[in-house]
Length: 159
Image (cartoon, rainbow, N blue to C red; front, side, top):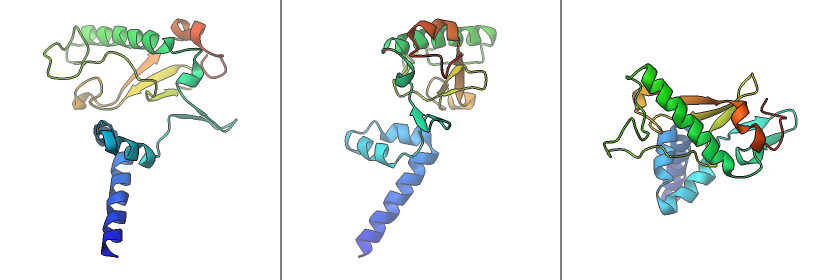
């Protein structure tokens, strides 16, 4: 009986941790057996169309997977522009951080955090430590619609 309570308490604590700390969830998701448990316990979702009651995923917005490279290249350009404007803005991308101490950003994942802002623009969001040091906080990049318009499924969400 005591083991059930301990197990329940551990699962409750794990559930709270993975839903309140994206960095913790990301770290655990890299462990083979634990990653599937983390996916089950994570409640957060990307974007919801409340009017049509539909969960919008990043892949559902595009005709094919080419959006990954298109958006990633634009983000790298924006990162370089931010760094050139303020060299205190440090990013983990080739050309800015080359020491090999951290994993450099190469491209977004198909499950990348995103939202559509009030102007109908796609915004790609990175948690702390994803593309730069933690002191820089969450990093967001507004993707110009003109560079993705040809690969969008429709213009219902992104204008």
